[in-house]
Image (cartoon, rainbow, N blue to C red; front, side, top):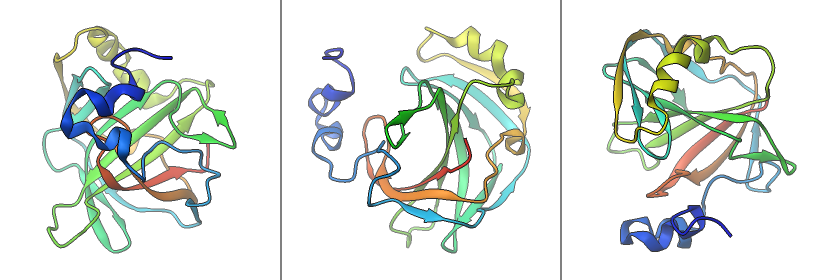
Length: 193
């Protein structure tokens, strides 16, 4: 039994969040699920440094790029990197095991002919040596904790500093993990933890 406004209640809080309760392809899931495919090829990435803003949305603290910061290609479609955010502990599990943290790199396609216009690269973390990307942002992230709606300009941030390289992925069709829980999201979660 969670909070009266927690994830199990999201679908009842606003009509536009109904998918959180009634959706058939919701995320997160256990990555040993039958609908997950194992992809053994790296994603084609083309990221570049750009101005970014750190935001506390109330659900998460995210790094949002203000300009074109590059893209990835999945199945021949280009998806532009929009933002990254973290969840602790991880949202996805592998054979029931939850990890210490999960990074989501959210990308959008602006091609109106593409049916699934959102893709997310997920990176699972276990506590180990410091992460260089997070270490650079630590002071700014700490300053936004508990301050919903606030933002901090970060200057130039290079998404190539994110340790998200992997030779293989768990891929499945799912949803956003926070309201409005829209479905049709292509998930690619690194197999390397």
